[in-house]
Image (tube, rainbow, N blue to C red; front, side, top):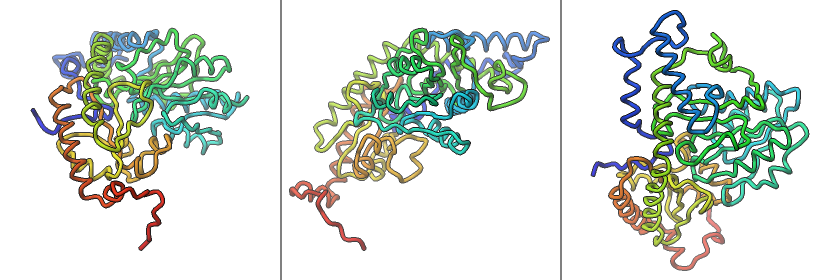
Length: 404
């Protein structure tokens, strides 16, 4: 077995070899390298056809019309285009936006930037399960609310929000509903014919496609208008100018095609591995699963090991590639803002590890992971005075620590 073991599929996924094979056919003189916007020759026509096939493959996974798919450089750009584009286009209707505190930074920071432009944003608290309470969301809606943005699957804890119910609420109030579905494609069924979602962001590299490519679903009926954020040659129906990256688009299309075909079998396989992992570590004392136990994707498991410092645990788990918090924010020493929003203490939030399982994870790797985790926790707790105090029955919450 090759070490280290990759268990950070929520940060990025390896490109599926079938996808890489496809991507390589659109680069060189021998391949199909033309600009899809070149209308006067075969090189351009071939590339355009390849792009349109990929557009249809992406639309098919989420049951949308291919004309509703706009290519971007990734889910971060899709989130920016959707939220800024809709907020700015409909600003005469109102300047109030709603999102949740556990959203990805690409949504939260986009909202922050709109606040600087004079918009007002409500950041909803979530329940201890990580789920948005529909009544609290309803209560936050005002007559001037124009856009609500709630993610499908959380990237740190893997909980699935009730997008169908939130969509019904938004539609009944005439509010535009944006969903960040970067972590959802290929993991949960998405049917945009039935879901009342107006804008949805997708990512290539979270679904075994390449990095640097994403898409935004923009509903046609009822028609949603956006203010473009990137100006130029008017590509993508004026919503996102810039030469289309044929090779990446084709690769993302292939990745979504495979996701549609293999999703259900893969979900079952990953669930079995997830259960195996949880069964293997649940006998460790003071271990807590973060987020709702039922409403979640099997691929993301976030666990807190009390009385162990998260960063030292990651160092001790050097043979496993895991993360504490999300890749986008793990460079900071702040405890995960998502876990804090669930009501975890700083200590528990700091001692959390996200295990994310994917297409190439094996049973052997899970068993090895269980063994490494057990050894690391035992070793770190042996060294921890806090663990000793806890075992002696000291209530650590009531200890008055002396500052030096």
